[in-house]
Image (cartoon, rainbow, N blue to C red; front, side, top):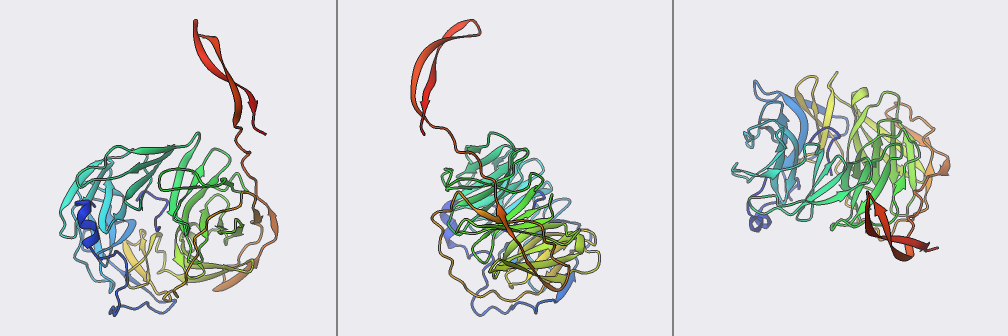
Length: 401
């Protein structure tokens, strides 16, 4: 799930399976990843201003404009062939079963087939902050929860909401176990929770160690762990299938924004330091490797292109940059079935120096956990007076131990 903290198409469902997979490097492809450390910048067509969101579709990299529609780049950086006039400016975008899907600034969800035919599917919440494809569902993160849709060829349909008692769902990502992992802002206790595709909770939420964490993005890393960016504490967290949580402090002023999977960990953009960085984790040690962006680029958005290179927008210079990466090795990651409710953590107390490749070893501490919910074992029905009227009310007389 490659999406950013900042705000991010649909023909008949029967036609989805006939389309080529999005973002897959085809066997015998003419493109190969550039060497690590290689960066190249490309400009959009004259008059277009890039807004910063990116998606890979039909073998091209699409960036939304500040006005309407998309700008397309093929893997060589030349102008692509898939810009679509979307009407209103684009806020959020993703791919849904190989079709392009986006919402505009009127909060209308639209879809397009490869031929450029646009269909409006319906409205979503004005506070929507992320679109995520989960099997044949569209999940929409919004203030106060998540709305799940099962779209038809022409409409989103009614949402099936996942509500939170406080705060909001901030970011979502699909884990190695096939469940949806959600980071939540809950007013002083930021948490990581896990949900099945039908909206049921799994396990016990993890409370992040710092009340000032301010989590802003989450992604499944190439090592099978879930990685989280924390803007409030300038840290990067990692939660693996064994239930172990670890965290490292980023260099001062890193301004990390977006995450995508990388071998052994994640790639992310450090906007404040004007580079992309890879963070890997092994034997309790985080290792950070950086690649510089063009000068004063203003990084926003991050995707892995069909050429296996990283792509990001430079909002300060109105360009898109290609960062050379190494082609990832194929690794089989066993699906996680359980994650322990009681976990250990590595405290965010050691700063990783801003060197080309640096290592930080961190000491253990303990993660706070949410108190268990009380379950009623016996109740009675009583008549009580509410606003001048007697009503029946169930009252718990004994809770399970």
